[in-house]
Image (tube, rainbow, N blue to C red; front, side):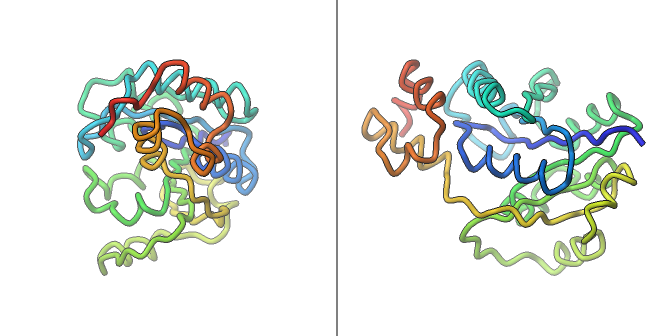
Length: 218
């Protein structure tokens, strides 16, 4: 079977160490060669992305330049609006018909999956890989819990021998980083305070300061 294709979608607004560390841990845990960071269009369920597509792509590219194994996957930005994960995954599946397709998400996204467009279709296109998330206290519906248990696998080897249909929860390290907190701190102080700056690589801090990103975020 062809090499697995793995992507982690997000607004990356801005990308932070939680994204990097989670992605690199997934690569190591699953034994895959690389993982794409996939900036999304303005999602239908979010009201603002904060900065332009150009800046988000530039920051993702900076991260990937510094982290072998990561690469920018820009397919969703080339698709017509609106942005839906299932639509992007169909496009990826057309590009890679013979490969296992791994769609990586945080546990917070899993917990809200029932609000996603055609969410039950996801596993007919890909495997879903879930990264654990810090301090979650969300109760899932009985329907979602049943769906998780029906499709959950505990052996990561199954992800490379089938092309879709499995849900795997990766035991990644928990990370406190928050894009929202980073944006709010930059807007409030005009600079990155140490407790927030520790969540960002130096190249991203420099880029944010150089372009004065998030200065007008309320």
